[in-house]
Image 1 (cartoon, rainbow, N blue to C red):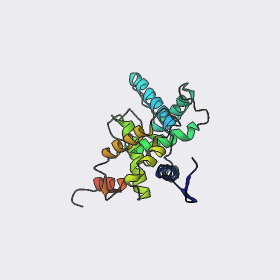
Image 2 (image 1 turned 90 degrees about the horizontal axis):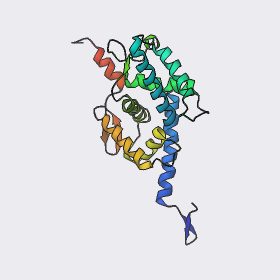
Image 3 (image 1 turned 180 degrees about the vertical axis):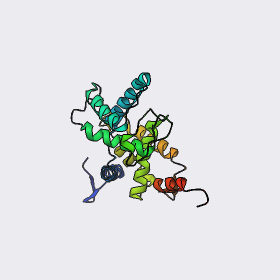
Image 4 (image 1 turned 90 degrees about the vertical axis):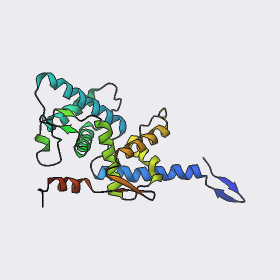
Length: 220
């Protein structure tokens, strides 16, 4: 939309300014997730989630648990063959790795003995039995937590930019307001790990530090 002119001076509408800021911030956020090897678009991410669920459900009857490396590879192949995906340009080998990395960060991939798979040299060789209840929300909340921690300047004014960065679907049929609502619902899941200082979201204690504290021997 062209700006209006009052007294020979262009007037920039507040809505246009807000939209422009949201897109600029969303690019910054997606660049941050790409740098962390965590970025995936919403539709391919959901397709990967479905593929992983299907593979884990199928192995229930055989009780043969795939190791994470095999699950990642087979889920990528299944997602690529999914007729509902309609995303021929997607690099499923890359998307599978970014989605799995986010799931590891969220600690939603569970071993046969009930432990979450965590990042480390043994992760790819670890058998996967199930996913944690609510794993999709937990995984996307982890992406949100990562942005808050890494950027260190995410505020209440960034809800629209976060919606663009995390849930952008190129689908005008999905109201942006619904995606912004999803952002605030995910933020609510982080209430034990993120606090609001003024209008800025701040990570209480980085996830790695929390894990290190849990692993310390008693009395140390």
